[in-house]
Picture (cartoon, rainbow, N blue to C red):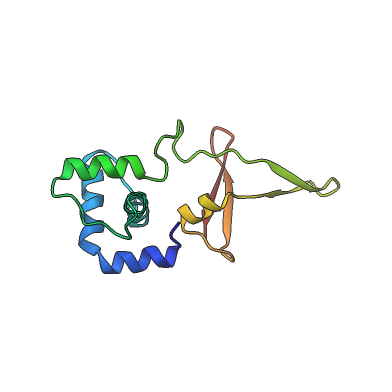
Length: 130
C-alpha cells in the first residue's frame, strides 16, 4: 500500500493522469480525491506487476478499471468498517480501537496523525484526520 507521501509524489509526477482519472469518475457520478484515484491506479498497476501503467486511451475502460479498484469497491456500505473495541479499564470506560493497517494506509494516515471521532446519525462513528 502507498503511504500519503508516496501518493503525493506520484501526483506530482503524473498530474495529467490524476486529473483525467478524477474527470472520468466525476462523469460516472463519483467524486473522489486525487489520493483515492492514485491508490486505485496503483493497485491496478500492482495487480499486473507494474509500478505505474499508462492510462488506457478510452475513458470507458479507464472508468471501469478505477471503479473496480477504488478503496470502497465491493462494499455493501461504502466506507463502513466494523472493528472490535478493547476495554482498557472498567473504571474509566475508555476503549482502544485497533485500526486495520490497510485502512490506515488507504486513508493516507500515518503514525502520529491526530484523529477526531464523531457519531453519525445512524449511530456509527466517523474518524477523520485533523
